[in-house]
Image (tube, rainbow, N blue to C red; front, side):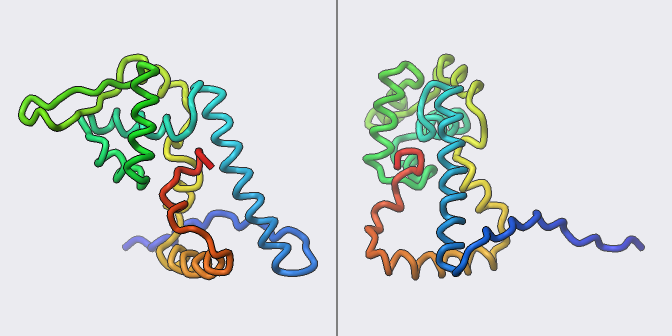
Length: 170
């Protein structure tokens, strides 16, 4: 009978040296924001388009024939945001929009060969480094983080609608 090996925990980042907890947390936010910003800068430099556009292209490649509403849902963004992304991709020749043979009202989106070439140049993860890192956290940590960030958002009197805007567009 083999022993059960516990999962390997990622190394914890040391807390920045700070006089008080608020300063330490602020520094951690800066580290997170810088990691996100750096990733999207690399995406734009290598792919030639923004991070949200790369993410949209990756969804089109994974789900040929997807509609704008489904794209918005897959990216967890507002439908108008997805429509704007699609418009830009169409104008750049990176995607096509065609009508369904079965229902002419339905628009089906597809990535073009040019879009596929752009996607090949883009560094991953296509959705961004933050969603990938959050997906690697255990459910208990995510629930605690969600609760604690909810408290911070309430203190900021922040607009909840910002939660449907891709980080690459902030």
